[in-house]
Amino acid sequence: MTLTEKFLHGCENFSNKVAIIDDRGSIKYGELLAMAQRLAGLLHGLGPNTNVGICLPSCRECATSYFALLLNRQVPVFINCLLSPQQVAHIIKDASIDTVITFSIFKDLLEPHAKTCLYLDKMQAPAQWGPIPSFTTGKEDDIAAIFYTSGTNANPKGVMLTHKNILSNLEGCLPPFDFNDKDILLGTLPLFHAFAFTVSLALPILFGASVVYISRFSGPKALEHIEKDHATFLLAVPSMYRALLRTALSSRHDLSSVRLAVTGGEPVPMDVINTFQKAFNQPLLEGYGLTEASPIVSVNSPKSYKLGTSGRPLPNLEVRIVDDNNQPLPADKEGEIWVKGPNIMKG
Image 1 (cartoon, rainbow, N blue to C red):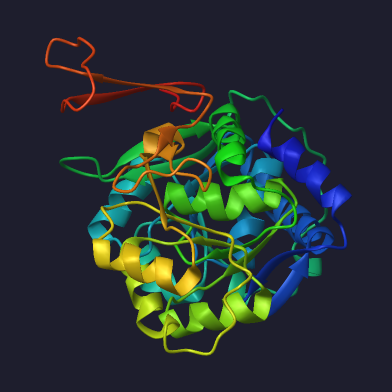
Image 2 (image 1 turned 90 degrees about the horizontal axis):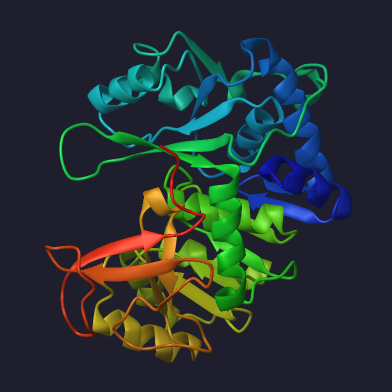
């Protein structure tokens, strides 16, 4: 199966259910599909297998753009809007991007480097975007997204993730997260990061859940959304949890809907762990991953939690720790992390 097929099935099965809540309200799955089809019609002339940039905040248009490109078998390339103009220029050239889907606030960042910028905030209503094209759902080994990761030196490097890579990572997340279509995920991280994309775009939308996007994070704003939208699943980096917790203990917000909170990207300070436990009466679950692994490698779960670790590997992949001679190491020894599984990048 491809992400495109999964998206179409989900929109059909959950047509009247809320898919996305953002700063402008909510849209249902049926509306998301209609927007994606219309945008696909507008982009249809670019041709299949064309790399197209997405430079957008976390919002309905970002999800719409992603699935519109999949419908056309075009390749979404996520561009970090916080990068320098030089890094953005490198990505556009390196990925052979002619067209970038964006908002006009990024005009100065993109126009010197991209041939065409499609400003969704300046366009007519989605119904006027274009005719719905015919499309095929593609193959599981087709590239479904390219993310640029800074790596360890020089310019950002493009990581090619296939439909199979991303779907396998999603399926591996289901058991530890116990994720289902009743969940409401609070998405605080920008979708140009693979972690945010997988867990707060692909996971909820492809499995019939709902997601709340905060385009500009603040602790009080996150608490308001938890209470108002009854969020069940939190996803943020430790610094965001620290900001949220500054007011959580003293606030009168109802936080009882939250059943799961996951973090990664950096070690979590012990004071954040202890304060979260006090405020939410549950552990803050650490995980580990990298863009090249689609990206989650391991994660703690409510049923299997060990403080100070990044949890167990997902059930459908293998992890090995080796020495300088590539020999496996026993427990409690430091070495290089090897990861093997269907989630590992193409190329």
